[in-house]
Length: 275
Length: 137
Image 1 (cartoon, rainbow over the protein chains, first blue to last red):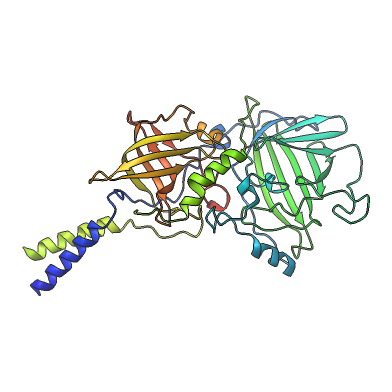
Image 2: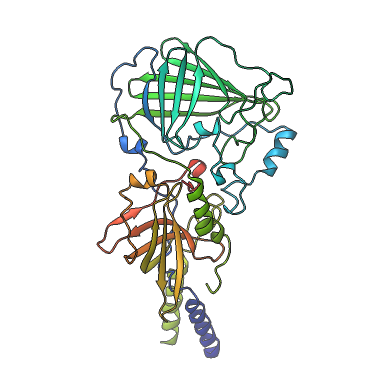
């Protein structure tokens, strides 16, 4: 019995000794940060008064990423596309094929679902510009009554090419809701970080409602019968008026991303010799 | 006496191992999202104020004097700036304490949780992205 105890003690001591000295502390991390975005720092901004009529102009703060609903069931074609997408949540960066890994554009509508810390609107005659903090991208939303292009990506001579940020038209419903319809999003863009796909047939409707001066809500509906078996609302998210009416520059810089992959992304997924 | 020693030892082992991480499905896939390790007396070798990730390279010396080279990633400068970071937050030679989510692949790379400077200042990393995973940005 005594020998058995000694064996146990020695074994346990040995097990402890091989623990890396660096593992001085382990602790569960159920969440990181979480309240340090501009959106959260702004806290309760109050209503700021009534919403101005037919006006979204200004800079708005959102979450890092919108809270997403589950997508509708995929069609067989959609399942096949989804299977090919290796997202950053399940695959190390070195193995992921997320388009943004190399600083390709987020595309639309992903840029309304992810990296939404800052967006802005600028209203112009005949069009609305929507401006994005991330990568300093803008969308042009036509309000002059034109129709959306047809046969985007088709084979006819006058078929428009797909665009990473699609083709958009908008109109007001009442005085406080701006409705945007978009087609023609390039199939290379993903719908979300999970890698859900979309086809060139995707139609997206965004409904921006200015609840009051300081609050704007957007509901985004996905309709892509080639990819999903039914339309679905992917998110309803909220934005806050930024008092200083400015936001940070936030870019994916290809040369710096390449250095990131060299120093962090690739080595992270491979054992360090001698570690 | 021997039994008491053994019990004490077992309790110690239990205390040291009870915090072992349960692997969470979500998270930056290369890292253990529910585990944080602490690297003390780390010496900064390079600080990259870069987009889309700020990065910190640093050396850690073990008891025998062996030096391991580490790399830690943080969010984008615009994100961590809100948490008090600046492009001058770290300089080569600074001695810091690094808390990070380690790689699942036994590499000396991790996602920063926070850095504690020699003067006690804490630099936290930026928040999670959607669906609960650690944002790459």
